[in-house]
Image (cartoon, rainbow, N blue to C red):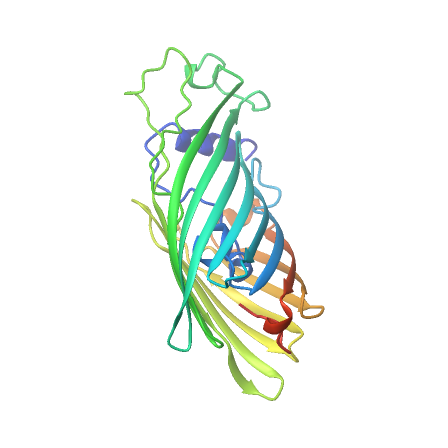
Length: 316
């Protein structure tokens, strides 16, 4: 299996892409700003989140994603601002994305609705210098390193009240060319572009016993010409301190209909401001024979204004 993953990535890069390109996150419920700009300011203060994801451990060229985000609510409590930096490496490709987020918030019923806009700059690089190639004379990979700066924009909506949230977002609206073709290769021969992705998410907090709450959540992911992918999460919050749960992620495998993964998730609320989280994915598809699963680590700190502080930590 050595280098098979890198070969697959090369094939995806140099044909018309018809697959999901954005990173995926098992702890998506704590990382909404990465894909929905309307979430900016929802914590009623300032939040900093760091996330590290290592997907398909021991699989050659496996994806590694790092996220650092910050968002805050301005004093008028109408405008939220945020910035998210995402570094994603998969096979010979590395992407560093800086996203600027703006959200306008207003009261709607018992909760708040937010409309968001996102602008992002991405440095996209291909480096074949460390790859083992089957054909050293292939024009597509004869240049060791190529890179391109891409500019894009996105939009989103987000609604939240004390017990429920829902959001819809499209992070990238422009279909940039990401072929990075070397000299001597005509653009008509191959084509790779950023495809439109859409994310629909929802979640709730439902008290079921004294000091125990049920936290269901879902994330529906769509990319043009690719199958829908759905993350379904069921969690329990104990004593407003520990959240533990299980996520099932669907997948369109050619050999099995079991789905993509079963994921274990846990977050510990150290106090009203600090959250430490982790997740481990057990692969269900045919790739299970060639990797040791996936894992995530999350750290989050939120400082809320005195008049917005509540006894319970914010679980959304």
